[in-house]
Image (cartoon, rainbow, N blue to C red):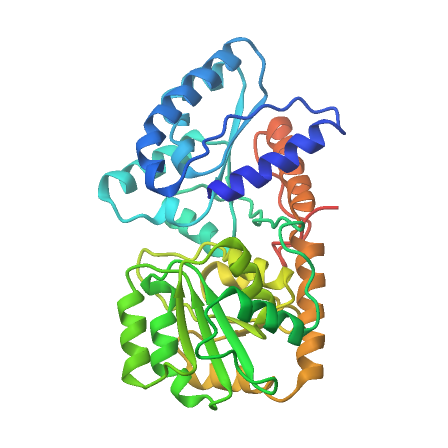
Length: 378
């Protein structure tokens, strides 16, 4: 959520120099380990700054980057409405579904205080509806991606060699005729990584390898599954990796795997790693669940398969084994689609359009068409 806020800020700030737009921001930059300690002070400062701007008639619309910061609308609600200031909040997933009873009691109060609620996917929109959010306040606006973060991919063999130099190459990367699969993310149950290692990898040929970046509470289960099926020659759990290794992993892999499984009250709101992989020319095979469905377009930047369907994953992966031309074409489609559809500049234009509608009419205008909901406005 912090990365989304920072990248959206950069795009809006750039547009403020091009458009008749007065824009200001208050951002919290913090490492994860200190974030929770800094949030209360940040909220106090943000509430004070918003109140001053409202009293000075210096603001028309306030955009909150998550439901956490949007909690300020509850104590400020009277002041905001007296001055005709509208409010909108981005909703990611866990910031609305976190199963803490006092928080869930508070979430509907935040919805009632907001003029617009902007979930990042249809799945997150549904979670908002289930918690009492009014339908006419909702408008799906996708996350974006920094198109400059990763350099364009080179040929597969060159990228595979770069990857081998970034990590301890023992066991070595898969042979040229094989496939390298990868997954990236915090290893929690909903990511489905342990399920994939335990259920799908034993059914794939020996020339299909799988590398996993990221750690978390599911890491012991992943390691246990590797040992149980004697997969250590083909499956590597890399743990946390630096950004240069992450980029090399994306570009050096053939397919990105996102095998999410359903977990109650733990929503995959969007799946930004799918965009990172796509930008690096790595098409995805992912579970058709939650916000993932708004990121992947079947046959364009990857394939969607039913969650926890091992046969479907094996079949989808198998269609690219030994078919380098099909893989190259899929990689090119994924990269082009990701950059043209989810670049932050286009997404920021959508936010500006929605916020203008909120300012003028008090509600976000609906998208031009319901499908696909992620299409950014021109």
